[in-house]
Every structure is written in structure tokens, then in C-alpha cells.
Length: 477
Ligand code: HEM
Image (cartoon, rainbow, N blue to C red):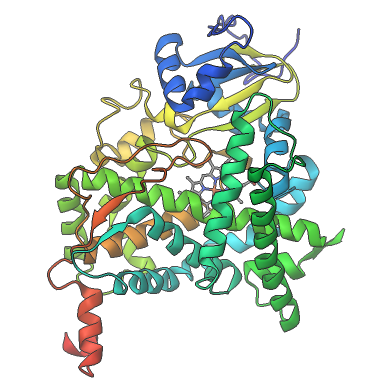
């Protein structure tokens, strides 16, 4: 048997693959569906960094071994696609957008869209991110209770719409939010039911999904029509999608719709949930908040955070990296082997579903000592240098790495930094969130409850006061 493998030199013998047997007929199907994150974490502790179980009719391999993860993401990426079952799940929603796409079609779309995420373009979005965060803070009243998750979803949606599509979705945010929620519920339901009702079945959930898709399609049609009417290529991402051409011409209307839907979805929920978990972890570790506050107070004071300031805020970045390790929004992603493969020291047959979990890799005590501890200080340059490739993958890696990684890291530092400048990072007394894993890990219906407490001399409010008194904060300084 010849298998594509990491190196040409003589390889060590293959390791045996531990199996979670589970139910005699269903294998691990119900164990996984009952509580997927808990099952995954427990099973890795029991079986090691790679194990297999049967989920429905196929063999699913769960992987947190860095060598194998890196082979999947990077060295063998060309032999590994998105699973058919996952494409099927996304089809009514994301169609053939970048996330579920593969092969030549993915390559073409990726090439057309990637320039929209060039660093200089992303850097130029910083002032919008600051302005919208300030707008949000201005809407708060001292002492009131608010759900931080809802606010992050609204804020990140507004940011993505303004920066990538130059449109203000403030009026549509409730429609989009509600539609996304209904779509997610239907997708999760479909994914979690062993024999799901067909999509055409007129169940209440399917009907809600169709209505939600219609309203999202309506929002997207309006975005495209508005840009086409302007007939102007502004050089932004929306222009790339609407006007860009290559040797095969421009994108079809359907492909355009799929890419816009993908970018709206991928561009806000993940960032909103990462910020929500960062808030939770900081609020539960007051000494870390104090350190982040001191860094911002000393470096920035009360002026708005600019893109050039970010490199002067290493601790803020460490807090986010540690949050992405401890509670990653994208906690699992899947691939399908297109041929028999040797990855690291294991054998994976053609058709194997390969489930890679940023949550499980981040909990691996071999690489992160005391993994349940929230310790941003571990993220020194030295620590990152010695971390094996594939041990920390909140944005995946290789050709299918998250296209919005730089965008998201900048946005999260600006939003979190601006919040730390202005308000106390807290949770409502006694509040503990739920952790709901399907799709993007989030705190579920109870949200992330907290009390608004402005810090003394919160700069956003001080700026407003100065404005009402007819002086700008620069003059006042
Ligand atoms: C903290 C925030 C984010 C996290 C943790 C995250 C994580 C990920 C991960 C793990 C993937 C790979 C998924 C897979 O292969 O199945 C991915 C793909 C992707 N992400 Fe993100 N993401 C974030 C924010 C964003 C933002 C802000 C955007 C756009 C504005 C974005 C756009 C995309 C796109 C287009 C892909 C598909 C890339 C491809 O396959 O070519 N993401 N993201």
C-alpha cells in the first residue's frame, strides 16, 4: 500500500487506532449528539489524541494530535475536502460559498475575494470599528442589566456590513439576527436528528427556515442592487464580488448571493461569540482585567484606540489568544479524506470523516499546562515559538485558514480595548452562562448577563460631555 505521507524517508510503523465502541448498532452517534463537546473532551482523555467511532453510517475520526492536525490543515490539504454531509447541511443557507466550497471552484472564488482582506484594507476599517463601539456604549445607562452576547452580535453585524459592504445594517439588524437564529436552529435540528425530516416537509421549523432564508435573501438582493445602481467599483470587497471578473467572466448571481451570505454569517457570529467568551473569562478573573486596564490606561489613556496602537497592547492580545484557546467559538470543524491517507502515524481510509477540534486541542495538557486555567501570561513569544504546528488552531490553518483572521483579531482588540477603557468588565452577581456547542459555541438563550458600570472618567462619556459643552476632548486636554 502506498500512501501520501509527510515525508519520503522511512516512516515509523503505524499506530493502532483506539475505538470508542458505544452502542452496538449506532456506535458513538448518540453519545456525540447528546453533548458533543463533553463527549469529545472526555473521549480524548480516555482514548488519547486520535480515536475513531461510528457516527450514523460512517466512521468519524476525532483528532487533536498536532502532527495529524497539521497534516490535515496544511501538508495534505489537497487530498482532503469538506465532508459531503456538511456541504449538504450548509446548502440551503450558504450554497456554494467559500466555507463549504472545494476544488477549482473554491480556488477561483478565493482568488476573487481574498484581495478584500488585504492588510492595508483591513487596517482602514479600524476607525469604523471604534466609532460603532462608541455608539453602542453611548446607548447604555449606568446600573442597567444587559446581555453582552446580544450586543456583540448586533455590533459585529454592523461592523461587518459597514466595512465589507459599505452599508449600515442598523435597521435590518433585528431581521438578520432573527433570521440567522431561525436558520441555525433548523440546521442544528437537522444535523442532530439521526433521520431528519426532509427539507421540503412542511414542519413549523422548516417553514420558519424558509421564511428566514427569504428575508436574508431580500437583504442581500438590496445590497447587490444598490451597488449595481452606483455602477462604480469602489475597490472594496463588495465591489470585488459584484464587479470582479477573471478569464471565466464575473460571478453568477447565485454565487454572489452565496458569498455574501457566507461573509455575513462567518464575519459576525464567530467574532461576537469570541468576544462574549473573552468577556466571561476576564470577568471571572479580576486580576487579568486590572492588568489589561492598566496597559490601556498607560498606553492609550482616553483617546480612541488606533490601528497603530495595537502593537503596544500585547496583554490585550494575549487575553484574546487565551480566550480562543479556552473557549473557541469554532470549536470543531470537519474534513473528508478523498483517498487512503497516512497522516502523522495513523492510517485514514478514503471517505473517513476527520473531525478537528480547536476546543480539544486547546485542552491538551501536553502543550498547555493546567489547561482549565485562564492564563493570558502563557502567550509569550517563546511559548508560541515552541508550540508544535497544529496545537493551536482557532482559525484553522493552511489553504483553508479563516479568511477573516486578521480582520477578526483587529476588530476584537479594538472592541474589547474600547470596552475596557470605558466600562467595568463584570457579570451579573451569581450569573453563570450555559455553554451551547452546536455550530458556533455560544452561551445559549440565557445569554451573558452583566451590569453596566462606567469607569470613572469613561472617555466616551467624557467626549460627549465635552461636545455638549462646545469643546472637543482634544482642546480639553
Ligand atoms: C474570532 C472570529 C473568527 C473565528 C474563530 C473564525 C474561525 C474560522 C475557522 C476555524 C474557519 C475554518 C472552518 C472550516 O474549515 O470548516 C474559518 C473559515 C472562514 N472564515 Fe472565519 N473565523 C472568525 C472570523 C471571521 C471573519 C470576521 C470573517 C470575515 C469577515 C471570516 C470569514 C471566513 C471565511 C470566508 C472562511 C472560509 C475560508 C475558506 O475556506 O476559504 N471569519 N473561520
